[in-house]
Length: 211
Image 1 (tube, rainbow, N blue to C red):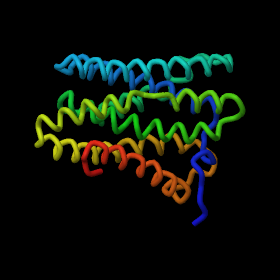
Image 2: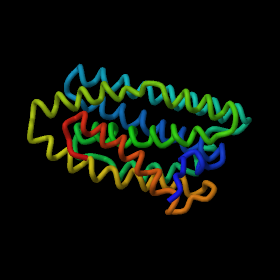
Image 3: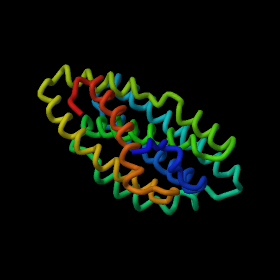
């Protein structure tokens, strides 16, 4: 089978920017909610920092939409219902499951959109890639999760199971983005998503959890 780079499947620029901006806004909302629910100050500070990084990315993507003289709200609007439905699917039963959701979901999607950015035209692609490559606070989230698992070893099995469920829902969201790209057939998409899953496995390994 011929190797396919994810950038070869990149959708048109405005749909890419609109979806990416809406997802980063969702990342901010989700992380801010986790920070509010977390009982300890250290966890609140770490998760709030990640929420701030997501908001910065959102603002940067909104600026890219404005560079095209497009309306950011209208660019994001077509994805509002899909993102809301996705958020409901990956909502956990407590703040620790929600934290793992953020760690898994946004890790997968950041990798995904970063690869897609390589297929965007000219400076839009370069700026989007730089923006999405910036530190999203992933390491800080991992430290909080490691601390929680260390304090309650039974939590490891619960989070490992939850993490496996999250992957399927997140990949369906990713595939919905690719559906508007050129030549985005199942045969071309599957090998590319395998690379994204490999990075996810490394993230779970860092927590001592089975992907």
